Length: 265
Image 1: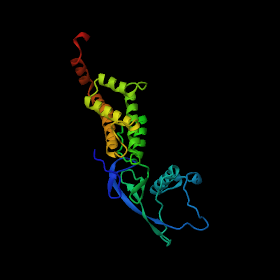
Image 2: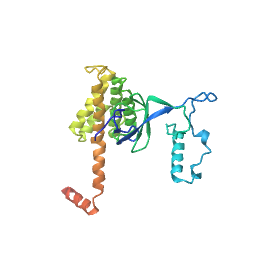
Image 3: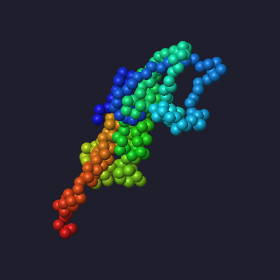
């Protein structure tokens, strides 16, 4: 699947919210001086507007907009507010922009050429079938990749440890779990990927032959390998099982009869 990293130089990229490769609408910002009688920024929260009720609004489009506004206030997310055109004290806020995703309509905040909200890592999105305990380490590693390739590599190694525990025995060390998976018929290519991440990630914590101090490229490869491992070990079997389950009962019975061992008769 094609992945386009979010960038101020693109009109379409993978959304940091929904992950879809989608068109992005760009907006510049206007600033207005805060009045002297209210000198501090106003932070919109749901609590101060708890009496608002979108159900009281008759116009369905306005009702929908107000409901979305209330939900965004509850989450502390940025949102658009219609400007009063009669005001004149407006200033363009340069080097700060907003992108809006066509697919999910969420807003992202950019400072110069850097995405500052939502917080997003440097690595490609994780495979959606990645277990949650593994996903947490993947996302944390992605967020620190630029600052510390060694730290990111170590976290990916930890993620692999947890993944092998999920697929084998969580109480055993990673090397033993890989051995168990190999004994159970693990594809040799997946085994190589597992061992590559295991060794490189371990050396990030206990320096050996591999030096990751300045080697972001090696660290980035670990993210790709982890996604490949999840694809081969979780996603592909799941997709095959889903398609197989769609077969008619008669076809399933015929397959079972065909593959039945003689001693089972």
